[in-house]
Length: 133
Image 1 (cartoon, rainbow, N blue to C red):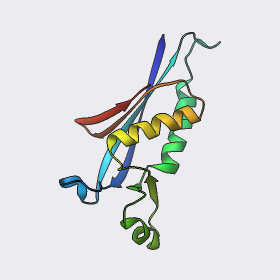
Image 2 (image 1 turned 90 degrees about the vertical axis):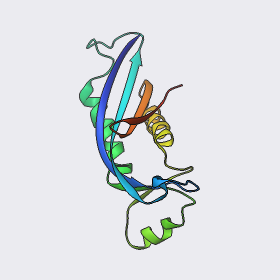
Image 3 (image 1 turned 120 degrees about the vertical axis):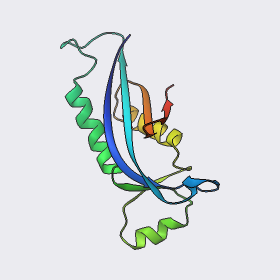
């Protein structure tokens, strides 16, 4: 099995509902996303996928959805307040934890028909979550 990995950087804000700790407050992160693709055989160029093509597809999705956004749970009472002030929010079904965001990235890659093996979401330089099937 061949695998390739591309790394992306983004900035975002979030907070966690029903959580007691620092992350219950609205705050920001400089996150890192890693997307790993897999293939049993290489394409005609002898690649799993061109890094440039993978980068273009994932960066476009990340820029449009997560980068420089406030990521909140749909149930967060701040959503109407922030949107009322013109703030660009991305809403998740559940708390926007690193685990939730790793699966979100994985699902986005799969939705683009990429042969995704794993998505990793680094919330800080020492804390990450991964999702793979």
